[in-house]
Length: 533
Image 1 (cartoon, rainbow, N blue to C red):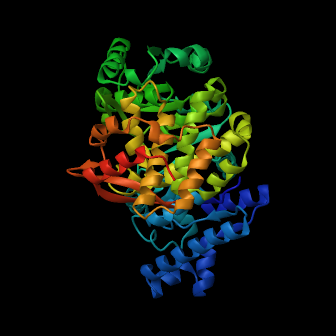
Image 2 (image 1 turned 30 degrees about the vertical axis):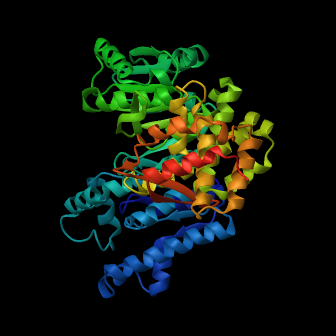
Image 3 (image 1 turned 60 degrees about the vertical axis):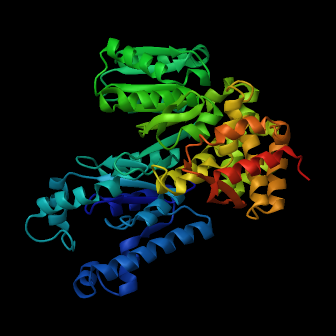
């Protein structure tokens, strides 16, 4: 329970009552936002609405919530905060709360909300005649905002103690939320997350379509089936050949055919157990089967956990064009079971650390310092440090993705190091270099190109290269087939006409996208053939 707990949801769902119960139980500081607002105005909320108006109330509400989050960060504590029903309606404030705290939406039916409101009275937006109708209207209007939470907990017919217990369980689990309106989901990061979370998520599924590859099936298939078996739901399995070369439309058709043979319907649940190739393909198959069914991602590699697990980008390669065909289709949940990393190869794990370095450069200077200070052996084998690295990486990506779900702007920064990296990976036939190794070389290229453009400080480029070398990742970009990669850079999916959106690092935790002419980028890339000074 390291982050503040914020209880959100409609009026009369029990936020203040549950907050007080939890504060007494765990001994944490309690903040009732309405009480703070009343203290600012010197009068009750109903009077504020009547005399000052709702806009004045909302402005002070926003200021007080911001102050509460600032206090938690500066004091280093994790208070329990009871919010008003509209406190998290401004999306920028909601995204901040989701990143810095644990947001739980308490829900109740319109009839139950109306009953409770009638008993308590004094609710400005829910008073007078037609309470149930008004409650239904407010709930519908605010549904996308309330859905962006770490959990949604129904309170109808439940005691406050029961609700408090459910809230506490989520707070202790410390999941990461990916905000995508009503398609929002969370990522659970823990040892044994698969065994602990999959049974609950599978309720209501008519059948499972279980997708994995031969290597993962050998290492973890039996454990997954042990979890799925007792649920009493039919399970069909698709075992793919491993590797990036299987990431094509023919493999998706293989999954479709298996779904057809198994009688998979709209209530079937696809489960992708494997690396990024498996989860990307499973998500794309789920997005297109019967125009979209639910799916759960269970990444088994560090790379898949810190990169492919977040964002809902699914798809396949088309010849040398990586991820050229796909769809945005958010999963129901992602389970990052740290125990599954025990069977990953050392080369695969080290390669994935390039994505962690990229993530740190984008949005977490503290993660950069952690990687620079921790011995590589500890990073590789400590479960606690692995949980920390995965959670921090996912929080950065979730923050960016939540701001830009469909890569129309801010999300492009996640491609730091990938323009040249993807080209080198494709030139190698997706075999000589792993994706992580290609990203490492791509990061070196991006940092040096940034220096050449006068955007990246030379000391940051040297720091990044030194860290990659310390993690035993390739950095000698000058010896790579750069000339052969130039044509493939033109296939980059961030290209628009003769320009490419290229991501440059400005400082630890700060990056930017700049538009470069393709010819200029190719010339700058060609110039990398000369060893760095």
